[in-house]
Length: 173
Image 1: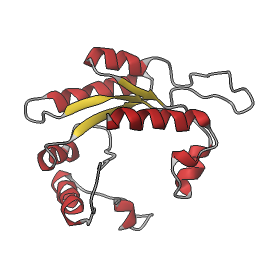
Image 2: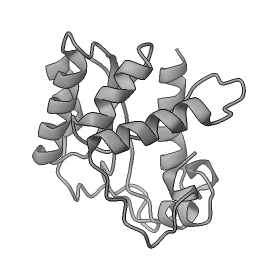
Image 3: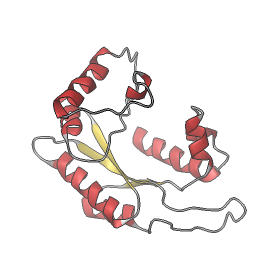
Image 4: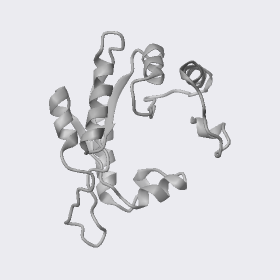
């Protein structure tokens, strides 16, 4: 479910906290989810109303902190983790995912280019004493796959498929 499915794609969503929280609550409570093994909620970065509302509505939730390697993203991930660990929120952090960890050109599969820095995910995982669940490479066909409604598992890149399989396996354990 996505707000994108019920809004015009050109419309900006201009909501303050109470409105966003109300719509989130409606999505959670009024969507016919069927029987679920997992419900994955991709939240915007930050520590605002959406995170707080989710922690109140889904106290059994667990968090995965997704960052990119650069220090600014690590700092944002640290803030989100600290929010989840507060007494008022108290959401367990399953681990860290480092997105856009490196780029490997198709024609040079043995090369890695660290476009956004290197090591931010492992640094934050050590600091928070939680696992680095996976490092996800930057792969060119992911954008096209998303635009056509396909998952990363349809990618031609073994690197990204392996990264997401690793993530899924660690989460399911």
